[in-house]
Length: 504
Image 1 (cartoon, rainbow, N blue to C red):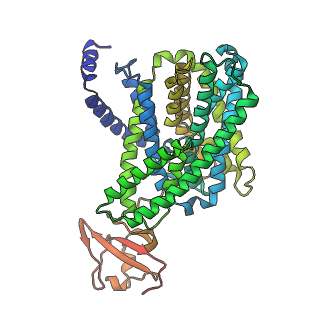
Image 2: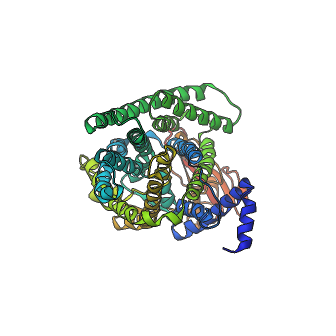
Image 3: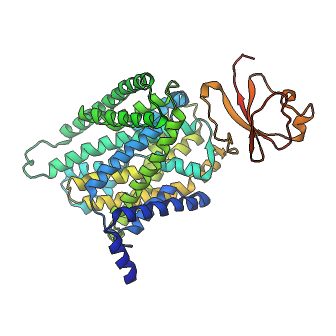
């Protein structure tokens, strides 16, 4: 390393906010590269944090407890935003499939992966048999979830859309499987921590005692989380409708506070706070009576990008490439096993009852198991708990996440095309910034041609379907409000509202 660079970085390390701002600006500039070459944008954020770390550029950050706390808050923001953008009417056709994948699918993936890790690392870890089983289950639980942010950043960057309700299905599954994975992780971290602690050797940690307790804990956490989400969703909708606030950002802040309250209260009651938060946000997003809904979603989109950017950068800073050598071999084998065996087998088992779902759709869902910030964040829990070998577990999970992003992230669009479950997105709708409630109808844009004006060149001569209205016309750089006698010209760009209303 050049001494001047090292000296500069040492100086900048005393001004953490300045360095963080520079990293964020550089990360945002990298998004252009990601979209251009079809690279997962979040992978770039993660790699940037890795490069900025102590092994490469010299920025030292080893506070796993702080990273875990900030990461949990960021995950909450991401799930809240994802839920607000989901309408129950859209996910209803695939609700059962999504719930099965996000619960049973995660559990099966964890079990299959734990068995593989047991045979792969059993002799290397040199642990008592019962403790080895719990450690393997803990590692597999950490790795068992998929990342909605990573999946849909790839889909958005490559500009493809999915057929056969696959979009809503993957959105529901990847958005709701973090709570299940986190529950399993916390349970097994506690079990392993208890077994390793002095003075617990006489306690009963047999499989017959621990595993039923684990299943009961998971059931109660998921059940209570879902119930609290429904209750808080109803309460939040009532409050947002009744309270008259002066601006859309105030409603957004209210929803954020309600989400944090839902998460915290559910956790205090020993339920799954993340699940409750996600269910609550879906309830709010599915209600048409919430004021300023589109403005609220735009607000959350912005802070979600900031949350995930900071989280990926921070998690990248925690990793040390110099320590990857010993973890590389096992991580690659575990990662490949999850991509090609554990995830596909779990998906096909969960979707077996749904015979109307095409085989190619099931294959595509099985391929969309991309890892993201979730597993890396969950991998900080053993470190914070002070478990033996936790640093190596963190490195294994980090490498597997990178491997998953590279293999599945780059190949996702091509697999979609190969299986014929995706198609290119249509041209982007240009509505000149105008927005209308969905119940009023659908907005479309259209550019006039000479053929459109053959029957007359004014608005009243336009032959349009019943219920269709011209809302605005853009001519060159000017905006024109349409009226019956307005003269039209080829090249005029119109925003059209199509409604099923029977009113004239």
